[in-house]
Image 1 (cartoon, rainbow, N blue to C red):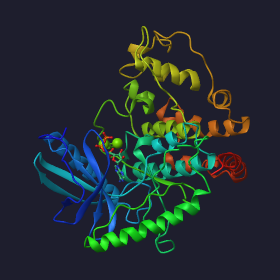
Image 2: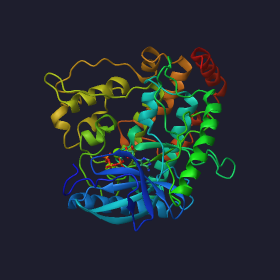
Image 3: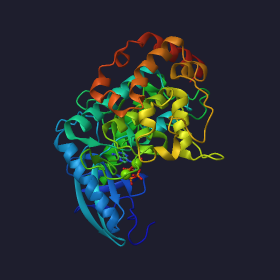
Length: 418
Ligand code: ATP
Ligand code: MG
Ligand code: MG
């Protein structure tokens, strides 16, 4: 896609916006853009440079994203709302055309990587709680203060960052939690206390190298050395990718959200709003705690992916109320007039708390408490789901499970022998 209308090809050292930003390393890409780590010579900080493809429809999409990111930044001067901060934007002319560029604060790896590097086993409850609080803080801000629906909330679109205060720890302040593959690590646990020491040594060496290099390149730095462990780093994260976000009073697309995180009202086309994000949030929280996606629907013999999805939902959450199953534009395609699925007749009901015990080996207490938090957010009736603000008040988020989790970590670290 490095052709007319497509991506802009970048080389290390390329400069943007009249020399202000210097490209350092490719960070990622999506359907619309490539994202590079860049050094901001004006503020001496690292930033993520999102360079949009140049064809007109991508330019339009970037303008929309910039409008939304600007509103987000304008309402969050202190940058405390767990949403990515837009620093700057500009146009860049290249051989493939004019590219709109967004300059974003530089964040770390996504929650999807975090789940993967934990070998899909689920994170400790305390980490899940901290991450949930961040996501809910961002949703409360987007929904209640701005009137925005994200529409594509999922682990891939939530990035880690470190909260180390530069004035207290200048060595590690520039670091972002970029995770290391758990090679040679039998338990696949990323969070290991003993790495702390090595991390500090490595960081000192990296800082020395960076300043040397900076001096020799006239102020241009190397990329910050990544932190290799999440321990000692307060786990925090921010929501990114506002390319599909929309104002609640101006819904854009009929079909929103990534399949596995899609709310029932979106499948049934009965109208959506903020509660659709809450559904995706609950699916994300489940995935963090268990390591597996909550719903992975598939097309089968005689039924569609949508129908399988609705069946999977009902198997964990119970039968859909008749009024929900019969009122959306697509309802007649899937449900009969009694509110039963037309083509998938026999459902294997297994309520969430029992699923957590039987499949994921949670203790009875843990399962009940977590299900008590999640189930209301997975109400089939969108109007009945709690808001992000209400979720933030839930006792599960503030439960003190310090002791349990500490013993869990100790028993794992004990086996690692590093
Ligand atoms: P999509 O097809 O998902 O809509 P997109 O073209 O809109 O993609 P993004 O999802 O915004 O692009 O970004 C692509 C990738 O770049 C992300 O998955 C992530 O790995 C990386 N990335 C994006 N923003 C940042 C950031 N602020 N800091 C660090 N990395 C980032
Ligand atoms: Mg994305
Ligand atoms: Mg996008």
